Each structure stands twice: as structure tokens, then as C-alpha cells.
Length: 154
Length: 140
Figure 1: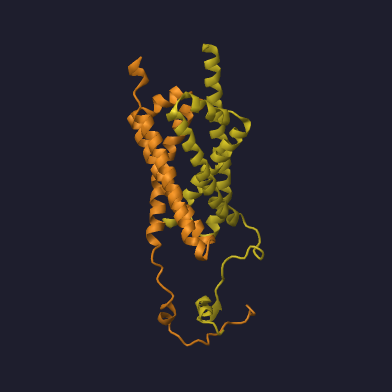
Figure 2 (figure 1 turned 90 degrees about the horizontal axis):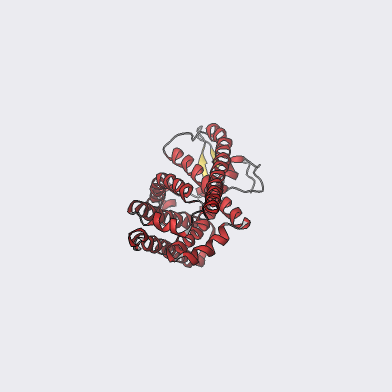
């Protein structure tokens, strides 16, 4: 080793012998693990949640501007494609929430053993899928009930 | 380099000498901590938001105006908007730190900060406009 920076990658084993520390993850040599997918998915979900939130602000803005602007937004939110986007935003928010709670637990020192992390991963997936489906069903259900009531009244 | 053989250190430098000159990390803990704190604050705010979404699903503009005109709703909404876009900025900054290197790092960071600030302000103004709009009920 000639480069001094290489020295930073040298660590000691518990028996005192030297070892080369792992460098940043190389995706092409690592076997696929759920934990690594969940890790990058949390980041992707954060970005998607941010993009959706920016659109949510457009909804707020339209509501504050007046009925005509709001009608335009409703065209988007009542369109099947718009509904799909809303569903995607919901999924991103729910997963980012779930993964965020896991991160807070890890930071506090809980469930941070490798075994525990591997146990919790599928649970996080299940909770995310379940909560997203329940949320979407209730949101679209409430919306459908409301429009039916309005039709009866008019 | 063969990774299997035991590495040997030829460079005779102390740990301190190695660390010197690499530069300090400058910041890090504050950014990390604020990210966690905004996350903690967003947990109850998100719960509130879900309840409000269930109340407002499929609502007409009038319902939203009435809802946003209530000071309690407007306060919660303002807190949610400010913390959401603050947390968003902190999180996206880490992504920029990870993937954008060299000269592009500073402009990318500034662009993100500007965009987050403007979207946040836009949200705040929209909420305030809803909150401070003359009540339609009182006029009728």
C-alpha cells in the first residue's frame, strides 16, 4: 500500500490482526437482500412523497383561489390517472412513515441487531401494503358516498 | 489489489497525522438531529392530516374553505406545511450530498434550498388566504 488514503481502509480485527474494511456497497457483487431494497425504497419514497406534497400545495392553492380553480384540480383528482397518482403518493407517504418509525427506533437503540432488522423487514412491507389499502379504500369510499349524497340532494 | 491477503501498513503515520489535513466534517450532527426532530413532529401531524383527508375526501371548494377557515385547522395545516417542506429539504440535501459531486454540488444545494423555501412559502400563503378569508357563513 503506497497511497496514504488506503490506510483509512485498514481496520483491526478483535484478535489484533489487520483487515481491509469494506468500501461502499457494490451492487453488482452483493446478493439481493430485502433490507437493501427497503433502504433505497425509503429514499425513493421520500422523493415521491415530496413531489406529491408539491402537488398537494397546488390543491390547497386552488381551494384558496376559488371554485373555478378548484374545479380544474378536481378534474385531475377525479380522473383515473389522477387517482392512480394519488394512490402512488399515499403508498410513498405510508412507506416513508413506516420506514421513518423504524429509523427512529434504530436511532434510539431498538431492533438494530441484524436478526431483528431481517425479521422486521417483511413486517414493514405488510404494514405498508395493509395501511395503504385501508387508507385508499376509506378515502375513495368517503368520496364516493359524498358524491352520491350530492346527487340525491340535487 | 488482492483483497484476500492480509493488508500491511507501509505508511508510518500516526492516527492523528492521518486525520489531520483531511478537513473537519464541519457540520453533520445538527443536520441529522434536525431531520430526526422534524420527523418526530411530523408523526402526530401526519395522523391529524389523515383524519382531515378522510373528512374532506371528495369535498367541494366550499367545504374546503369552511374547513380551512377554522383557526385550529389552519394552525395544524401551517405546522404541517412548514415541517414537511423543512424535512423534505433536509432529506433531499442528503441525496444531493450522496450523488452530486464537484462543482455541481453547491448550485444543486442552493437550487434545492430555494425551491423548498418557495414551495413552503406558497403553501403558507395559501393556508393563510384560506384562514383569513371572510367567512361565507357570516355573510349569508
